[in-house]
Image 1 (cartoon, rainbow, N blue to C red):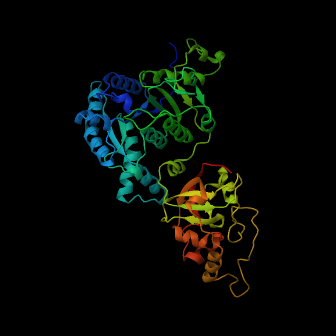
Image 2 (image 1 turned 120 degrees about the horizontal axis):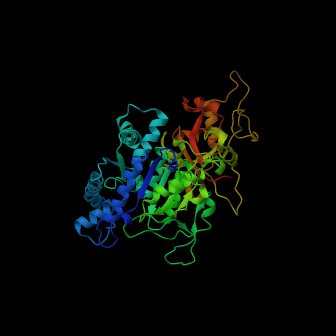
Image 3 (image 1 turned 45 degrees about the vertical axis):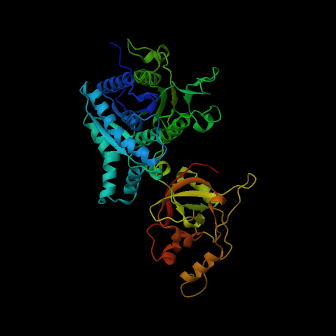
Length: 475
């Protein structure tokens, strides 16, 4: 018998958009597509794979139930339709999967749930009931459902989500879900069979892009102006964003057509064949990689150095509450992987907005002027533990005397005398992180060596003012 080309069991996330679930005009469920999805998921499960389904469509189903022609514009109207449609949608999935004896479980998430998970990991708030609940729902519950042989069906909790905690679209939700559970594949099923250089419906010269190894490079080669259907929230741009999130966490991401969900099998088979040994090492009956046809799809290859969960969640799920302005030296150092994503107070030159310790913050630099970054020097020199080599002291940090150190009041007065005020218009975001101190405290210690934190603040929980920093824009 020929050896199976499905390879080892995988964890697979499949995302299905609203336009693949309900008809754009009548809002009736597309039962043929849904049935094919169900058969595909069950067949994948029979091969030993674990499958998570991210399903849009609650508002579309709500429209059909209430016989409304279009989505309302108000947030409350959309929330109401989501409440009406979500129960009917999950009942539809349960009925279809039930015919094949496959149990399902509903998981409704908001961006805030996953943010709580992130904070729970950082501060160890395992006894906090809200954090524990979020952790259970977002990670442990999905893992437990998979181990029980259940197919989790994930959707955003539109009924309670507001703009500050919305993922915005289920492409993003599916990418973050795949990152959280360390999935091997994320399949974004849509109404086209891959990423094209232009909209293939309008431009006959549009060509499909088979493989994407650099998302930043591909943006200059394709047009992503398609906005999705009147029911959905996404388009090709949101799928590229989702691919960026997922591949950054080490997840192979595929865009392919929802009209042929069974192609998920052949796509996995095709990519496994590319990893097979050379032809002389094949067992009798094996097909060589070149003999397998390539199913229509676009693959985004995963990063060879994926971000850790914490940095991925910080970068993509936490809503930043303010900004920490850093100098160019700190920016250069933080862009290196060996920096650990940790910022000392010596590299801080300002703070924008108000935020509490533990909240997500933007990491920003002064806006370039005519293409040149304006250097903003730290208020004081650094000591040997500074991450910013090459800074030269402009005034001493110690004086002669019994202690040899400046008093807290003297430090504060000198620091405030040189503080520059920034606004959002003055800076540009280069990354995000989690603040260990609040905005007022970081403003007090900006530019100072970390050894002065206890002197200035009365305590020092950490020598770093911001941690778990992900730099998106290199120097």
